[in-house]
Length: 263
Image (cartoon, rainbow, N blue to C red):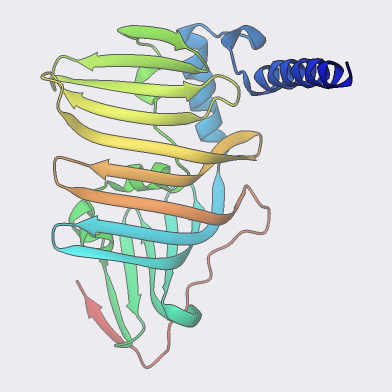
């Protein structure tokens, strides 16, 4: 009798645990307000624009056909046009600093004590980062955002709610491509962005995970970007992030005896 009672108790407890576990992990769309496509895109773009300045530190990994490396880094981004990047080697030894704006760049290589300066263009950015990103794309990549400005007044070609995600797609007839965005229903963080050709070939993939709230905006602490058409890969793993701090500033200094080369 005692054994039967214990078995019955065990079964009841198991059922209750399974029930509560299922409730706690479920993220069905019924628990939150489902936004129509136009409101969703406007909310996403408004969140992106809320981040006016950003500071983070962590690990940066870049892989291309002719380059592969990983290093710790610090970044300060101040909109609309300033990115300050410090690359560190083992034991926190500074290897390089770069200050990039829409118009100019300054790159200091510590080991050779050499400063490179010149006018900004996409080729310069490609030489610094070894990956093909425009300046505006880099601004967004740093905070794990996707620019949806040109989607604000355009109806999506596809709009679905799949479990805990919005899935929105737009076709570009001029470029023969399709862009698809997956957005977390709860925090409105973009978790995945893909760009495919008309034949379904994946040209670009952005994946965003490990979200933290900064200024009530879901900001990913892991950002993975694959430019598949050029076999280039960028991954950012943040340990610390902050946004819109009042005292944030860029303090870029290099030795007075450094060799200066105009590019």
